[in-house]
Image (cartoon, rainbow, N blue to C red; front, side, top):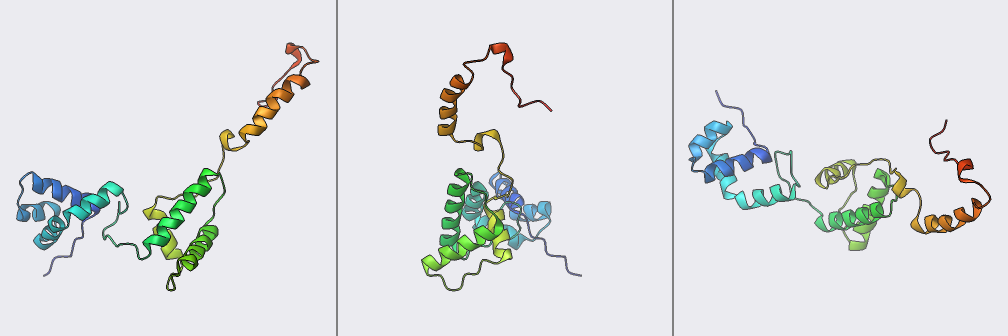
Length: 171
């Protein structure tokens, strides 16, 4: 009866590399991690690539490391995303997929398709989450605040301090 094939996660692969560096032989590592000796040998052979991916956190939580098919599109899209987020622009799935298609057209890539599967993997690889942009820091621009600080003193000039109230916390 054959044993079911076990594929180690990236975290486990790092554990294999660290255990091997401590002096454990391949056969013992195969028994500890419950996989075959061939898989242990492949992990040790590719340890530079595995350590690099571990440092970049690109493939955390996956069993198989598949490289990106269109790295130039992905890199351009993530740069656009970062700049749009820095400007507090709300971004949706449809907008990102449309921008990816525009980048692909600009780069002359013919076989690229911004499918839901591609987008979901892109989002996981780059740790992108869609949340509502909120908070007091993103509400008002600095120039508008500076303008109001000068106008506020003129508006409050006719009132006593005891007659000025903040309506922010009232019901």
